[in-house]
Image (cartoon, rainbow, N blue to C red; front, side, top):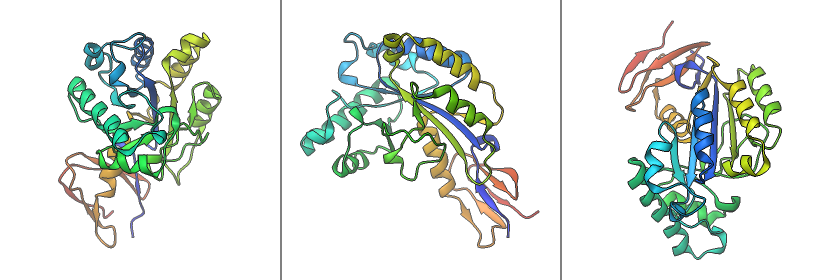
Length: 267
């Protein structure tokens, strides 16, 4: 029987993603640094604060974050576990609705304000059509999340970033996909005077052919598309019912299954 594993697009086994909260004006400099080095990520916005200092304006959301993902961080940034159920749902759905009108696509990602959540909040996110939610609980590891609504990042950017980045580059794991997930707030670079840290990190991580540079939602979609693949009992062929192509590794070699296609995996 063929040995089959999931791959990232292009047959890659490593992925780097960033996630930055609040949508303050310092995102402009962060986006410029990321774009210059080909690094991609997700920006979690508070739509009720757009246009109010020090947050970016609503009119620049679509252009500023082009090539990245716009995700939700609630309408007003409350501590959700201290809010009644209807208010939790309104914070999520109103923010999603506002951001979709600005970004022009379905907003399906989320970051927990203050990193706080409970079962009721998770249930509200699921009911509101949110596909993933990021916590602030760093792992210092590179594993894929077991549950995308409890997505733990690798590290905050002030937490041994360059050391963890180098360890990620050196990683030669074959049994697992490797994901490095960095989070933070762009205003922290300005407050702490360490913009050079992000310059150095992006320069170090840029241009590696074995890394997929992705926004958060693209990782979720890739995993979901892989899970929808229909394999024969003996892994001799596979059908991809998704519209997007899916990459797998078959006996150590990368294979692309185009959207809607069925292919033979026999050697």
